Length: 253
Image 1: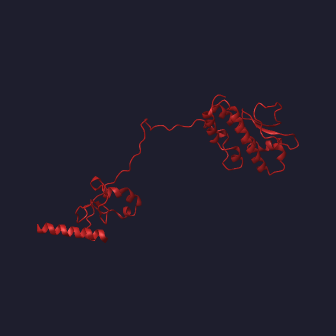
Image 2 (image 1 turned 45 degrees about the horizontal axis):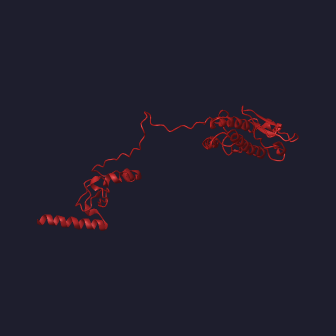
Image 3 (image 1 turned 90 degrees about the vertical axis):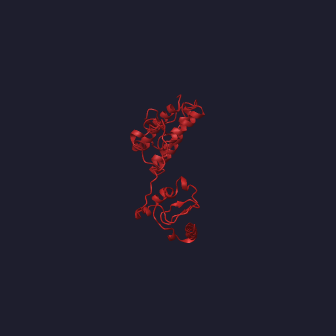
């Protein structure tokens, strides 16, 4: 096996076989794992079939061997717990076989193989009900190649678009707009912003929120026609004094 994808394909077939034995064919598997027989192992074959059989006679074996003697614990445990135990040992065996087959891969290839395997739920997670059971056609996932993020429909790079800025008219905002927090957030800059009010430190209109440039004289708001004498607090008082002094100076001159 020359590539991580080749090893992963073998892993998927063996995993599919183990899952079939522990779910779809569970009654047949339970019957074949007879405690009266000798030490038995659950094998998942690379062709997608499974079998309960004695361990290999040759030493060392051609492939890593699965857990030995799974049949002895069958009658001493609840069936669901016994199946979960078989699934845990099968997960360890599947991983061992995969990395045995990956002996010729380099570090990057082994990392890729691990990522492919880790994208799938373990047999224990499926048998124990921690994740939903996979449909039969999807057991041994086909997600061997990750989709790459592509450009837009016509190959143009996608750019983040800024929010459209609504223009304010001279009339008052409706009650719905006053109560809409999204409107306040998006249009705060549109009301008081702009290049000519870029300092953001001026006097705000108490009604619509438009910010006038620092030092700029104004008596009534250009947008909502609110008179500055309707303002309250220190800012309003300073504006009124400033406006009166300017008006008096204009009359005297």
